[in-house]
Image 1 (cartoon, rainbow, N blue to C red):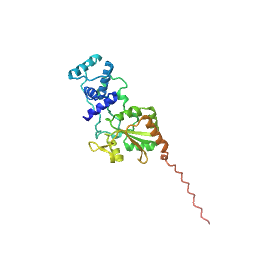
Image 2: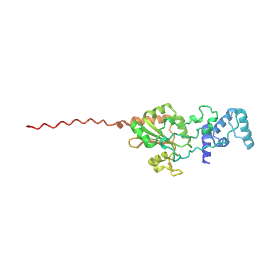
Image 3: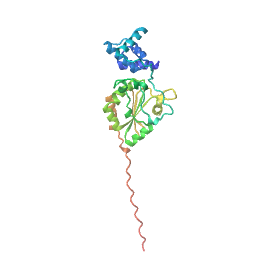
Image 4: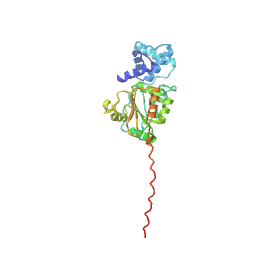
Length: 283
């Protein structure tokens, strides 16, 4: 039920629909697949010239779907595939030091290679910043930040929270944001179900952490953002919830202007002066 409600909420947020019954119909008709439901809804609007109202009975549903297939002359439908908005915990045999932001609510299914999809779909619009994200664990990212004299920008996301996808679309893909991050920060982004995100939460926010299945912990609000001093591990800024593009640029720029990591430069030790030889004995 929670997955279905989250899918309906995502559908309504993307399409701008305020009718929960309409959203539930299209999501159920797509087998819980939000991207397919949105596509069906938009195709229905384009074909009919107005809002796509849900059919009222099973016969009408079947007739509507059949008419849509005949109109577009598509091949026989694939078997229904259901997806989860919340990713499972990574297995114990996975390499946590080589994390890549993975399957999100809008990512393509594994077998979609056979389908012909238009470029620039939902998957690309809401894609996480894979190439901008540090692939190592928290301590490795902190060590790299110390070596490169860059702040550690921590971002913890939740696939079921649409604000996280909005930041993927509006912030991490923006050229100005990316330029600021690449110049002065190391981005460490993890989903809240990642064990490393749970370890971070236990270390910095144990007093307000929420328990997850398997003994893991998570922040009460997502996305969670923080800037960590790589030298001391101390957080210099933290924020729970979505941040707009302009506000994020302002906050990150303010941190780099008010704080300095230049003292991370190695101390130059002057060479020791040569010891003069002892004086020659007299007589």
